[in-house]
Amino acid sequence: MPRIVVDVMLKPEILDPQGKAIAGALPRLGFTSFEAVRQGKRFELTVNGEVTEEILAQAREAAETLLSNPVIEDVVNVEVVED
Amino acid sequence: MSTELPLIGDYSTPTSELSGARIGVVTFPGTLDDRDAARAVRAAGAEAVPLWHADTELQDVDAVVIPGGFSYGDYLRAGAISRFAPMMSKIVDAANSEAKLPVLGICNGFQILTESHLLPGSMIKNDHLKFLCRDQLLRVENNQTAWTNGYEAGQEITIVLKNQDGQYVADEKTLDMLEAENRVAFSYVGWNPNGSRRSIAGISNAAGNVVGLMPHPEHAIEAGFGPDHRGTDGLTFFTSVLTHLVGGKK
Image 1 (cartoon, rainbow over the protein chains, first blue to last red):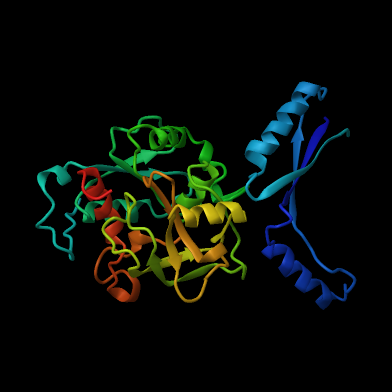
Image 2 (cartoon, helix red, strand yellow):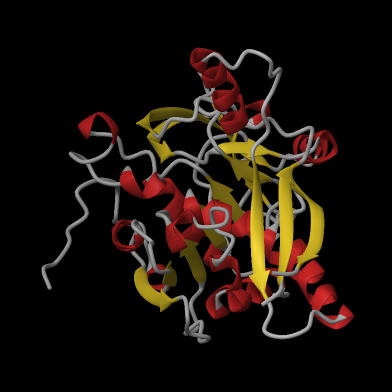
C-alpha cells in the first residue's frame, strides 16, 4: 500500500535542545565532522488504494493542523512513497 | 467521602454568592493533577465539577481548570491530541464567547491552551533537557486577570514547578505584544528554570479570562503540603476567580 510521508522540523529560529544534545554526543563516538544536529519528525500515512490529489490534499491539511504546530514547526516535505 | 476542612486562610468572608460557584476540572487520558485541582477548588470555597474530555456538556460551570499531567502521553506534542477532544471545543467556544468563561491551564493544561490557540506561543523541551521538579519563585506581573486579581502586582510567590517540556517560546513580535499588552501574567524570578523566552512562566489572553502557566498553584493550597511544607501561595488563583465571578475586581 502506498504511504504519504510527512516530514516536520522545528523552525530554524527555534532552539532544538534535543539536537544540541545529540551534537554533543557525536564527538564522544568519534564522529567529529558534524557542526550541528537538528532533530525532526517523520510521519507515514498509509493509504488503502491509490493516492489521489484529494487524499494528498487531506494529508497536507492534516500535516498543517495536527502533525505540526505552525507556531514552532514547519512541514518541510509531503511526498508519496510507493511500496 | 471525608470532609475537607480548609486549614488556612480566612473563610469568613465568602458570601452565599461564592458558595454557589461551580468550577469544572477536565480529565483527559493521562491527566495527573485533576484531583489536586479539584481539591484546590474546594479549598477556595467552590464546588468542583468533574468534566470528562469526551463529553460535550459543560454542565453550567462558571469557570474551568485544565490540570497538569501527560495527556495522551505527550504523544506527538504535549497537548496536541487533547486539543481536539470534544470537551476542548466546548471550552474554546465558551472562552471566546460573550460570557468569557474563565479558563486556567496548568502545565499540560497550559500546553493544551496553546495548542488550542486560546493562548499564543508554545512549549518545547527544557533547554537543559531534564525533567525538573522544584519549588519555584515567581513574580506576579499582571494581577488584572480572572485568576490573579487576589495578588498584588509584583508580588513574589513560591509554587511547585515540575515538567520536561516547559520552555515557553514565541516569535519576537508575539513576545513584544505580550509585554506591551501586559499579558505576561507570571515571570520566573532568579534562575530561569527551562530557558523560557523572557523568563515567561505564564500568560493570559487579551480579555484576561484565559490564563496558562507551567508551575502548579494547585499543589500549594494547604499548610503542610505545599512548597517548604507550608507554602499556600497557590490558593489565591482559586479565590481570585471567585472574586471575579461575583463581579469584584476584573
